[in-house]
Image 1 (tube, rainbow over the protein chains, first blue to last red):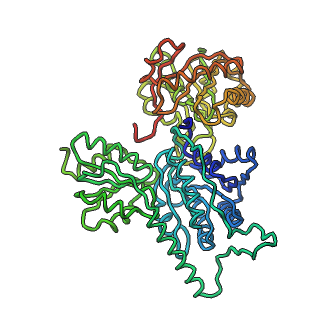
Image 2: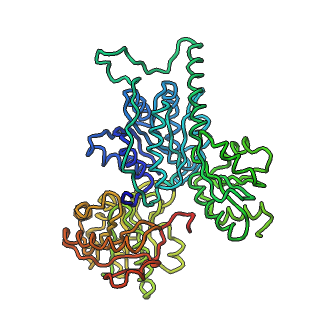
Image 3: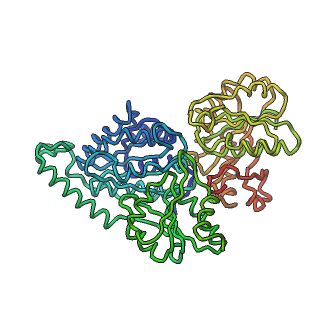
Length: 352
Length: 218
């Protein structure tokens, strides 16, 4: 096993991107994701890569568009308000079938909000990361090790399907330190015969574009793209179970919330309450089949988020025949395991 | 250690946890203790998080009025200068790297007028610091930026909550190597009190509580 080192979540994301062959980073500072920029600014010049602090988030996402069009693996990173600025560029990337990785280290919102951790960008990431008929892949790791591992996976799937990918975490996962080991062997990125990197006089020209002059042609293109989305949904929906099998009460949480819920579930089990958890690993595609299977024997569900309740809507779309309750803290406040345990006890009619 | 203790080191090396432990130890022996959060870099996981425990133990905590608010600006507390010259125990938790040491330079003149101990905290397991030469180079950069002299090395090598005694033992040779390269003696190896017992006979071990941890483990 490779040597483990201690890293901040944000640093691990940046280092994993470099190891995944991404030598082009375009960003703009915002707390709590600044370590990504700081790390890239130190490392990229030593590796012969590009670190560019753009004049704005809008510029940075369009630099990713350009790099990606040229067939290059590129990364941009921001936190909630900055991601809002990137949505136009994300839509253009989707419209032009460009891969690329976007990190969202969420903070409290709306508006400038706070610099504390939040999960209130679930709707934005999974439902409308830009205008138009589109999806991006959204991954929600919950440990520093998983964050690093997800970077490789996200880049690879993004290249394979020509769909942008986002890693959606929050300030606390970005800022905390945990041991991490990087893989020894890294697969080479997929070939990109569509890239606009010069014909060398040997092939016809490639065109990267999201503008259509004829409505029927765009409809056809969007339909083709949705077939790819369906394939991603069928093959790459992912979730992790924690004591879910015999759970009377099934909690559903992702990212940092799932760390809180894990401790609450363990505490509930000690009291004899059969609690369990399903942790969506991909948020789009949402792991519908896994949730349905995990919820089969549960009497009720409790969704915990650092928001006023967003993913809970997707849970209710899947689980229609059981009560689906919600508990959340928002604005940058992290729920405590004790608070979640209290909710579990309430739903079970008190400690057993 | 002298009355004024300055804690510097690599970003994420364990300065904040060590500073808090030093403050608690000094307070237990009845000293008048001021703990100062001089971090101008980090928005999360900083000394200002320990307001409660400081109040409970009677430690004076100095932090920017804006620490842990959303006003993410590098402001400093006005109380440090008088504390340094006040004759009591002062522990200064400096922000990481030479960047964090910029703020320390502001107080260099006052600190130099008092006897001081300046610790350089090292962690073998911090990424990009695994080579002793990297740790020694950063030490020199911090001295240059802060215009102060490191007196000792504090070995705080750890892998977070998963640290085993064997990990700490492996770090001893690393600490010696950094010491040899920099010419600074190793004052102690700080070890989580849950595993410190396993390190008996391994030199100067400072058994510490772990206070810096994710919110769900509190």
